[in-house]
Length: 215
Image (cartoon, rainbow, N blue to C red; front, side):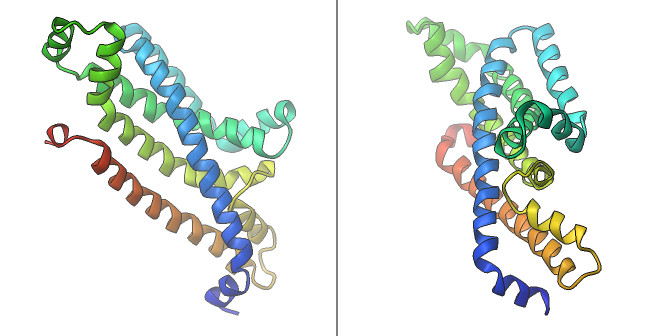
């Protein structure tokens, strides 16, 4: 059978796996965003701290995904735990870096004016600096999400959820009937979801960024 017939016959299973894939990527991006923004807030005023935080996040990103999963499996076992841990770690660099850049780029005159009208340090951070840095933070989340869409497929090595199961199964059965269709179905599903989610980020950016900041 051709690819479209294969997808049609297995649509229910592929839809569930696609939902699991998107779900784990989005949830891990949100977790990484919380951690990354907190790290960025903690170090952006210190050049040394910013350099160390960025270097550590960069180092994590250089570890091959197979190797990282292989190191996590003996500690966390198979399934969701090593998958989520690996994806969160990989998502940190763009978010941490963009948070530091976004906060560092806030005009000092704006923060001085905020303090001048009686805002305390927390209010200046949450109501002024983070709002102005939001486009940069969101851009970092967007990059992280696109990276994780592909990396999450490799999590099938650790029995993680998602369309990677189809890709691995198809590759392991190379040469047998519908093996190529199975691998292509998983790959095509990831590409389509990545494009859809990227489009959603554009909508979110437009809805959550004020016209003044958008320029």
